[in-house]
Length: 247
Image (tube, rainbow, N blue to C red):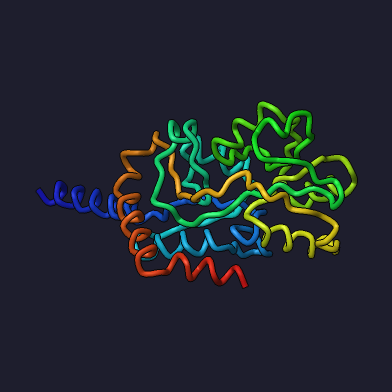
């Protein structure tokens, strides 16, 4: 009997340790002010909001910034959660989505003096457009991809450098004009060297996601995180976090 009790106690301890394992989560390492790596730190409004949601949910979090394409592949394979993700029909087949954790807009940037009419996907026909490798910015972007010549990369500064060298007709930058200003400053280039076209490629909520293959283990955690995100939206926390990064 004693050995049975000891074995049962051991199982309970192991189960508790397993339940206490932190959730591994990836954020993009190169889309400031939304998410980026700054030395050894991961920063950004979607990062701060995600951390706060997990804190309120009482779930320990292990957050890592990584290149988007690698992070997305690991998330897709069930090797970690992701944050700062747009929702598309194809992604909904693969992932469970949280309540919104933030929002951002995707802008189309040209060289000043090289602007062109842009209002619908067909307007990009024949254009060479730079964008984040592996990204999908919603249904408008998916439709637009049928028309433009894509030039994907892993870094928005590289994208802007190609634009200024005349190798692109336009560059997609997110999240919004704050990100553009941040990258142009880092490149030591004047902001008036480029133009932002009025039409936005996307103005989309961002989400925390986890692969459907992990649904059994992840669903209880996601439920707690969703409750926290709803409360953060209601009490103004999400907007306060966003405002911090607009300054």
